[in-house]
Length: 316
Image 1 (cartoon, rainbow, N blue to C red):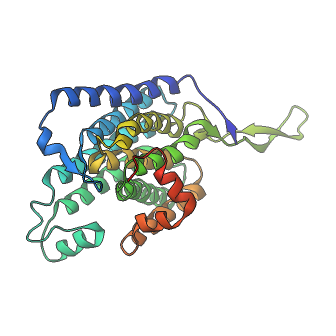
Image 2 (image 1 turned 45 degrees about the vertical axis):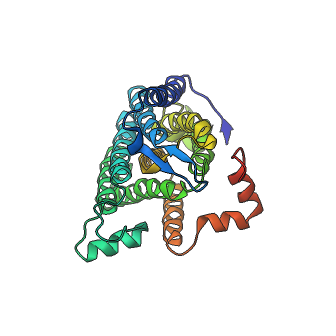
Image 3 (image 1 turned 45 degrees about the horizontal axis):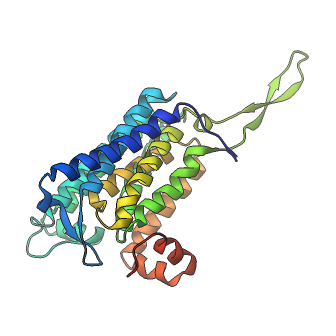
């Protein structure tokens, strides 16, 4: 594992910072539908969803720049599709606020699927379908290095679960100021700026004897889809973190789903199927656990996690 920064990452980082800060500033000044975007957080403080809209816009914009500069433009384009789909699906849920869920507002995955089983199509179900469809399209764009049909199908399914699952998990973490964004930065930073050392593979020299030559995976390249997508997301998340911690804005479903979907696409672009499978299993496991366990209680009970969760936050 070594630190590596590519010149092609700089415009992507600039897009992440510039669009997140610029769009947030414009929305703050214009106060577009301010009341519709206002929510009360767990402190009882009124916060604005414009932070999530700015984060979603920055995710899409940085992924678009990444697609233009990457050695893997189709895979990076998958980041545009995933973050745009996640952001739009999240925005529908944010704006509706369960108004069309019937007599009882459905919550978490079990609640929305239970409502669907009784013929009630909630905005949560619409969000699940939207994120799932965009994750599938993004996975198809990321592609597969497998040569067999079954291998390609397995990669398509695995990456779809990874992208959609990460989008959902980011939303589940967005229950306290900065929590989802801190988690995003912790994962996106190594994906952005660290690459594995090249593997040794045999190659025939002039004498016919085998010699060891480095063969780095494509995802280790500074212009890979993984690293460019992650670096843009990382920059946008750090920018959005400032107001999120100040409790003037929040991500909401719009920002959390967009950021999570982009992070998932960056992971899906990694060459290692073991990393992708392990991450997907971990993500799915956490989502299922959230149906029974409170993340906030688990974090509060763990000194290290609680310290990180409280870091830079306003005191209670």
